[in-house]
Image (cartoon, rainbow, N blue to C red; front, side, top):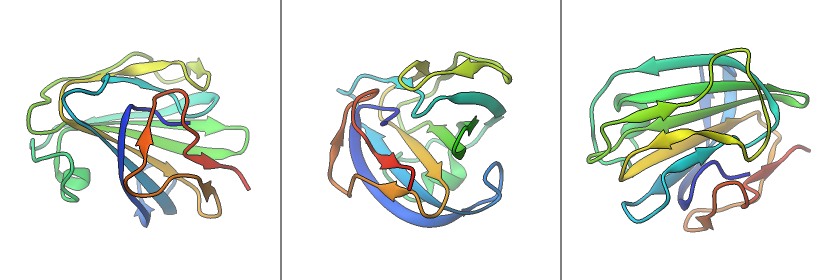
Amino acid sequence: IAPADGRVISVIPVEEPDFLKGPSVRISIFMNVFNVHVNRYPADGTLAYRHYRPGKFLNAADEKASRENEQSSLGLQTARGPVLVRQIAGLVARRIVTDHPEGTVVHQGDRLGLIRFGSRVDVFVPPGTITRVKVGDRTTAGRTIIAEWP
């Protein structure tokens, strides 16, 4: 399910070197200043990876934001495979909050944390996962189905 309220700005195949360590599909959701900025876990699993990286504060809707902006990455080991959620700061967002340490068992829809105004969340899923959203779709955190296991 969607980890954030917002609008889907991309659904593309990418290489994810940190947690999935290979080909994946990235679903990017942009949160404008009027969206609720509480983020939620997209799947049940164990928090197996957590990494904070300082960076720039480019417009979060820009493709470069995925690589260059401040971000917090959370890797879930689920019963069906790995899923990575990445909170990305934007122009106005200067604070990312993540609620749980590695090893925590989490449930789909549980609060993951929050990120301040005008930011973005990327979800990385294994290839073969069936995406259920397209660019331009609106999402509601904890409710909108963005992808399903095959």
